[in-house]
Length: 138
Image 1: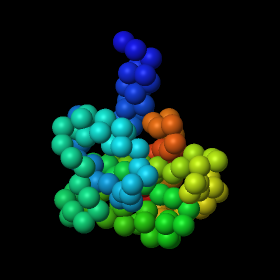
Image 2 (image 1 turned 90 degrees about the horizontal axis):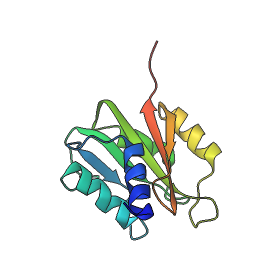
Image 3 (image 1 turned 90 degrees about the vertical axis):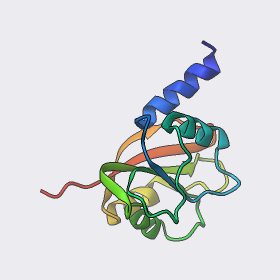
């Protein structure tokens, strides 16, 4: 197996998406990582739902750039159709790329939206992926 294929497989395994997962995508634009999108859709065996779909989903993929608006609102909206146990994968441009979002802004916004970071994944050359899950109420 080639190094590029192995790296792509490792990146996909970091997302922890089951093969039959229903994934909803927010923030799609012409700057997203189309190779990553294709790999996700190949893995789940279907197209991702867009932000207007109302089905319950296993995971959300949220592309977010500095200047896109209010991250708190976007994270709250992303949870609307999320099934219990599901996660929001927040993808932001890596440092030095246009639209980079500071980690402090992500942490503050996710906390206010009732989410916390559970892991990071190196899924793309240009994008950082953070797995956000709802906080547990004790």
